[in-house]
Length: 342
Image (cartoon, rainbow, N blue to C red):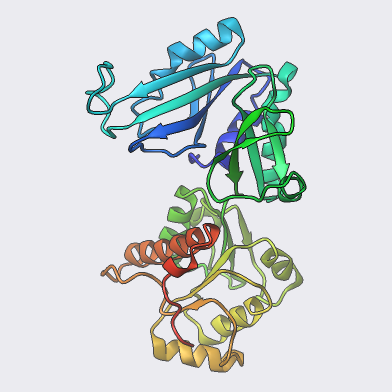
């Protein structure tokens, strides 16, 4: 399992009533810190924790504070100061050199799980939302807001966590929450194995599409949530593509690559990577009838990091895809790598 919020909540949800839990949220930082404002961790009374609020320096130290929260059943703020002038015992053991404030909140059925169950459901249905963490009233519950609800309240969804004051005067930290990236890979050859593994480690949802017998064997692709043995123009693939953020085409067959690109051109994906050199890309596009395609096509795919092994190709492609998707999410499209001409 990964430290993506989607994964953290999935782990918690099935155990939410088996023991007592505390939600830890980074609500303020000064200087440098490994995680940014809005990062979350879930800790239970057994000492298990899911998620990260630092590079591993603070997680275990929170256990004592978590016990206090569970004992008194009320929120508590904890501050770790590792700045240069701090006299805190943590100053020497933390490497970031910053200051971080963490809000610890008890999570249980009586406080509506601080609406983490609703946040979990939103992520399951791939609904972008914002999570409002109560900062000014320890008795107030956190809230989950859709983008429409935020707009009705006179604010707009932001790409970063920010404080927001409700009409009631209460202050919340609004944390934007995006569903896990969903990537579809056309082609289940041996060189796709590290690609699926790395995407899975990133916390991405991976679907593999390959109708050829002998390819996309489940035993080789444990990181894929789903394997479709279908042609790219099949109805189930069309339905799949409505939920996808990015695609990589790597069947090593010009006709099958062309079929995949033809299917993808009907969907507004932010990243489509095509394996192979430029001259091959031109052949694939011509075969697909997409010489003037509007596809967000990156081909040859990947950032030029060197190396020609499948692992290097996978790393370069996923790094490029990650960069494109993150830049788009932050509306900083000028930092997105230039799309190669088709």
